Amino acid sequence: METLILVTAILALVLSVIIYRLSLHPLAKYPGPLLGRITDCYSVYHCLKGDRYLDFMELHNRYGNIVRYGPNRLSFSTVGALQAIYGPQANTKKSHWYDNMTLFMKVASTHATTDKIEHSRKRRILAQALSDRMVHVYEDGFRNLLTAFLRRFSDPTSQTEGGWSTAFDMSEELMLLNFDSMGSFCFGESFGSLQNPRKADITEKTLEGFRGLNAIGHMPGLAWLKLDALAFRTSRAIKEYEDHAASIADRCIQKMDAKLRQGERLSCVFDILYATSERPDIEGFTLPELRSESTLLVTTGTDTVAGTLANILFHLLNHPQCIVQLTTEVRTTFSNIGEIYTGKALNSCKYLVACIDEGMRLSSIVGGCLMREVGPGGITVDGRVIPAGVDVGVPHHVIMRNSRYYDNPLEYQPERWMSAEDNADKVKAARAAFCPFGIGPTGCVGKAWALVEMKITLAQLLFRYDLQIIAQSDEGGLSAAQLLQLREEKSLDRFVITNKGPFVRFREAKVDGAVRGSM
Image 1 (tube, rainbow, N blue to C red):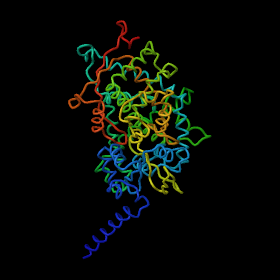
Image 2 (cartoon, rainbow, N blue to C red):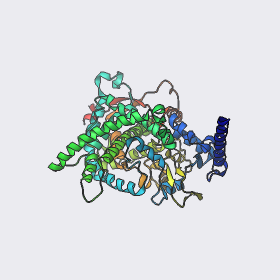
Image 3 (spheres, rainbow, N blue to C red):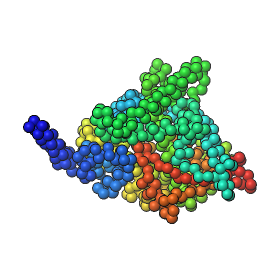
């Protein structure tokens, strides 16, 4: 009898919650999937499945510019929402979703800090290490790694008929380059994965960890019940990476002490951040904060830049006229590969920038919702008042494919970014919705370095090599649009969207019989 009463009481409670969330909740008037309006289990499912960003696209196609995808969560797809939620004057802060990042890393990085004042303090310190001046310092080390990376495609033992190399999975190759690059960038030493690819296995484990963290952020109770270790393998993956980063950080501290004593030039992000911790005039990073910042920079910098470059190559190689035009621009701007570095010549390559921007627009590497919590007093989004405490966001993948801002949004058209008198208004509208690095005070602090990496990598790659895409068994005869759809169906959204491919063959480009790479 007591059991029956208990079961009845539980069922009554569940039913009352369902009725409240569907009929009486302040967000009850907004459309969305039935399960999502009732429980965050809907989001947990799609986070674990790895199709979170595709689901957002489907939801907005079905319900319009405002979607209630969780009991207390709204997703928007307009420029007005982008500014109201993320802009400098937005009455929002980072959602409690970000608290999940400290479940295993213990100390919140700048990315995971929800308090506005504390976030601002950390970001100011981090910005010193990511200034334009320091980007030039880091560039020398990156170009050395890039030279080693490019040599991988000219091994004479792997060449086939016509001088073409065997096919390389560029998602994997670019991940190796950028893992080493971020090691050099953050800690002052390459991780050596270009020489030993197994050293980069840690990145895959970390991505699996982030898949779990993404899900836990929607239902923190999963971590409190210790279900994360059983279902997501999160604890082990994050712990392994945390230990890896801590060991590197400890070595860096020993080196830094010597550098500071001898007055040597500071040459990596960790150097700069550690130096601020020694200054009496500012509140610098503590040692745990240093580890947390460096760990996150390596993780996010590796997967985002590598994935974006792979996506850009995919689009270029499936649009022959685009890669021909870009290759021509690069090879007529530079006379030898050593000239390809940050400066006026590289900045003059407008089509290169357009190709990068269009790749980031059409295939956003972080396609989901970067959630913000509405502050006291609420906010107004597109004329609708959203009450305090609600989680809101704009999925990058959705807004950057919104036909309101982009003609033919599913087509790769770098020309849409090339300003001219007859399309100035269209370019302005496109720019307003363009947010691959986020916007406002919480936008990506590493944007400048990411763009430098992408421009130099693409320019040197196309200067030195002719490229040929190799279709996989299920890709024969498909149009560019169909190939993109297939690529997305195979992708995994683990907060960062990952894919395999494109699979590319290389051949040394020559001028008058001389190899371009040696010029």
